[in-house]
Image 1 (cartoon, rainbow, N blue to C red):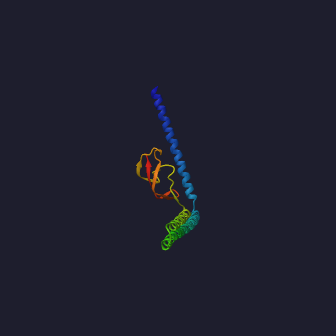
Image 2: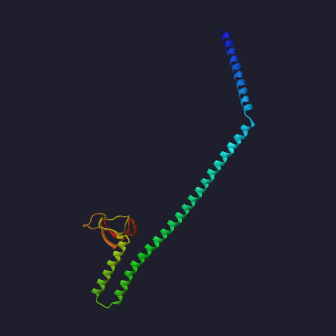
Image 3: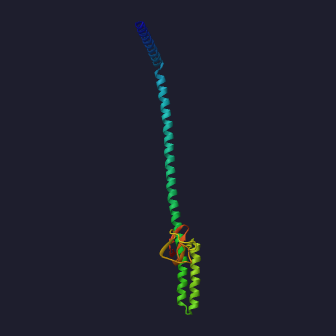
Length: 195
């Protein structure tokens, strides 16, 4: 029985091989017929079509290259222009700040040149300090606050004292005022901190 089954399987395999061979032969014949039908004029028209397509793609590539060059040049010009504007703004801002400091210097020199009593001299110096502080305020420079306690980000502790009247980390004394512009510290406040 098993022999019959093996024989039947072999017959089926032989039939499948025969069908596959016939199918391959048929496909090969069809391909050969298509190739024979394809004439030289078809070759020339295909070549012309490919040349036209190649030319079209070449033109598109040239247009893209031109566009890229223009964009690169525009970006370079923009970069140079903004760098020049930035430098100009810095020059104007630094000139303005120097002029304001020079006004304070001029007022101090005038105070030294005047003969007068100590009270008049003190009043003149106070007016000069007030003018200088106004100039700094216009430039965006402000004094660092010490009333909210010690902050290591803006204060520099030079000593620590014990004081029953102050809380821990309160500023007991300011030795030198600190200044900042926005969030950037220009000079740290030098302080004594309560323990």
